[in-house]
Amino acid sequence: MNIYVSGLSFKLNDADLRQLFEEYGEVSSAKIIMDKFTGRSRGFGFVEMNDEDGQKAIDALNEAEVDGKVIGVSVARPREERPRNNFNRGGGGGGGFNKGGGGGGRNNDRDGGGYGKKNFNRW
Image 1 (cartoon, rainbow, N blue to C red):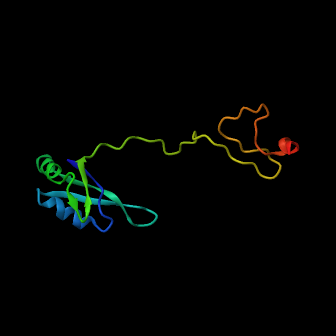
Image 2 (tube, helix red, strand yellow):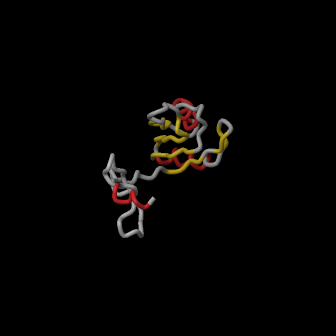
Image 3 (cartoon, rainbow, N blue to C red):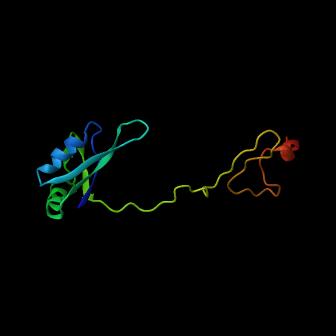
């Protein structure tokens, strides 16, 4: 069983998480997720245990206080597939020198908005 643990103190490490769950049975793995840019904990992690011991740990530790913080413990759900490069996020780019405007979003002007050469005479 894969268990999701949220609300962890930023001071905890993988060994602390493993030790916390070992009170309820054998832990296959315990991993706190770290921010790839700062190297700091992101405040959540995952623990793998067999189903019976995992359920005991969930029942005992959900909403328990650990290192001054109330943690959430539940069965981990599979990660949903997300497109890696979603280019359909709205907004617009800008243009370089004399390249027309950026815009983005909805614009009710017939000429398309922006601040390019064609709109320069408005001011």
